[in-house]
Amino acid sequence: MLRQLFTGILLLSTGLPQMVPAEIIEASLRPLARGEVAVTGTVAALTRPPQKGTDAGLRAWIKDFRPRALELGITAKVFDAALSRVTYDEQVIQRDRNQSEFTKTIWDYLNTAVSDLRIENGRKALAKWDDTLTEIETQYGVDKEIIVAIWGLESAYGTFRGGDSVINSLATLAYDARRAEFFEDELINALRILQSGDTTPAKMTGSWAGAMGHTQFMPSSFNKLAVDHDGNGKRDIWGDDPTDALASTAAYLKHFGWKQNQPWGVEVRIPDGFDYLRADRSVTKLPSDWAVLGVTDMNGTSVRDYGLASVLLPAGAEGAAFLIFSNFEVIENYNTADAYVVGIGHLSDRIKGKQPFRHGWPVADRALTYDERVELQKRLTAAGFDTEKIDAKMGPLTVSAVRRFQASTGIVPDGYPSLRLLERLRAL
Image (tube, rainbow, N blue to C red; front, side, top):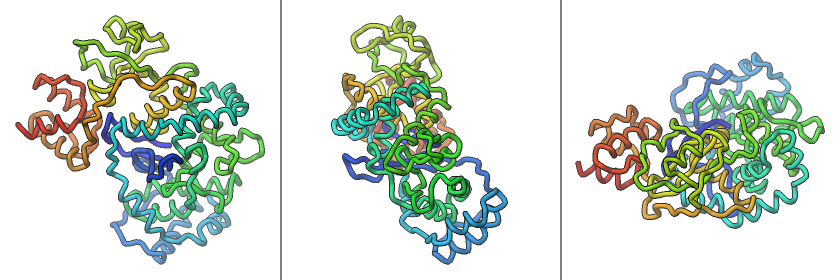
């Protein structure tokens, strides 16, 4: 479980995991698939030019990779058993190549992520596994509803855990030149899982990018944080019984600092005349202090002082607004897309019986395409508001440039990179 970034409607940074929801068959409910973030791996990957993959090429790569894997502690027996029947999977490479254009608005995303059926199924899953989840909640101090919500978005409560061979997918991706270092590291971690005896190559199935089990752990995260909660001597996140997967998710959230009974966020009202430059993750105050500035819950009263909070406007000044707490940041360690974190948080709230968001969204807007995001960055920079990078990622640098441009032209400086903003830049 690595990190990726999403702003109200647009991709901010490269990212990670994937699943297929039971309610709607689509490539992924996540903005991107796992494995997109470049990280420092334990394997010194070779520098190779892009190539047309073949089974013969993959076999040659495996032969070259074998001594490096053995140097890292993988036994010859485990390596050979796992990789003896691996074949090059062109579909995996195509899916890896074609995952960059996530263009859902946050409200469209939430319509699927927090659908009535997903809420209903979440409540059923909570009821069915309540004893186990209560035990996990007590042990790890992580609210059981948030665990169920992650389960719901990652695999539709275990319905879609992924049927691809993790070893085959990771070997194919590691052989490919584009992100070899990352996937070589994940392949080594997958082999370590096999060597530990937690599962077998045949049972180690998951997404095309190597995410595994009920809550879609990457092998590196599994090795660091997965637990054997049922005490059978194996950390089994792949089987029909979700116990170990749910406990491992709790362990993961606890590791990153989950605070029990603190909300991820609370929907709030923003007063007329609000200084939108304060709607920034770096600006934190107690909710009572935000209330002095007119930021209240939807009933007009101060949000409880759960801790320091910042104002989040995932769709700009015209969309819903939230005070978000440190647990928001904890969920970001699973996936840093704002849309994903809001989806997880809101799904957990709805499973608890809380109401839908009350504020509307700017539904007339659409998400910017990849080319439009690049154009926006280029036009901002040309107008004197340097984004520092032209990469189509609406990250903090670009959002800051948007704010500066908005302030200079009398627009509410909410940092929202909309099509309307791009059209205004085109008119300069």
